[in-house]
Length: 112
Length: 112
DNA sequence: CTTGAATTTAACAATCTTGTTATATAACAT
DNA sequence: ATGTTATATAACAAGATTGTTAAATTCAAG
Image 1 (cartoon, rainbow over the protein chains, first blue to last red):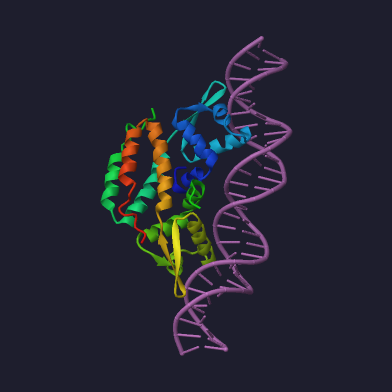
Image 2: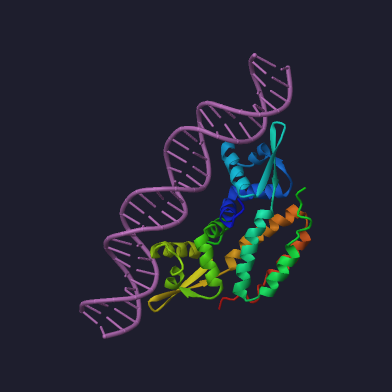
């Protein structure tokens, strides 16, 4: 989906943030993502669907597993909105431009 | 409240983001904030309550008006969570530290 | 002190969210 | 073919969210 509404909404849930934090360390299957939580599998499955629709993760079949990966591009939009708003508030647009220039081509934006 | 749940949830609504964007340009009364929207006054009033509970704005009586100001400290927490997660994903913690060091004492964090 | 403007609260309906359990699908193993 | 494992979907309930209109509050002005 990739709009700020869905991105922020997806980030508003602690379970989903925990899932993203886990995926920031490396990809994982749905089962592996379920393990740390006390909620049911279907509940996690739907959290993953929300994250996927927000373009925060991608999923690919791998045998009978489904491998999940972080797709942090969507988060950039959210971070940018915050930084822009703060920049206006601070009256320091220069620093924002600097920031964007620095973070625009994020490393090689990992995502082969 | 000042936790990531409420911050992200507050930011997930486009009306609330528009209100924050407006306030980034300078403080305003409730009436002024209502004007651009087609929704009712009470609806805006409750959006403001959500923003206040998320510590994204503060309000102070001024005669029969109530002046609203941006209080962007709460946004920092959200931005930091995103930056941290991305930093792990990129495997570049150094850049994160740099970023935090740079943005920690935000100007003088405006808020007299 | 009465009237009017600015804002909030109350009461309610419609819609979304998140969880549950039971069922379905898909791929692997025997 | 049959059973087992991994994951998704269906059906449903409880609670949150967002909007509405009507009533209450709060201050300023005449």
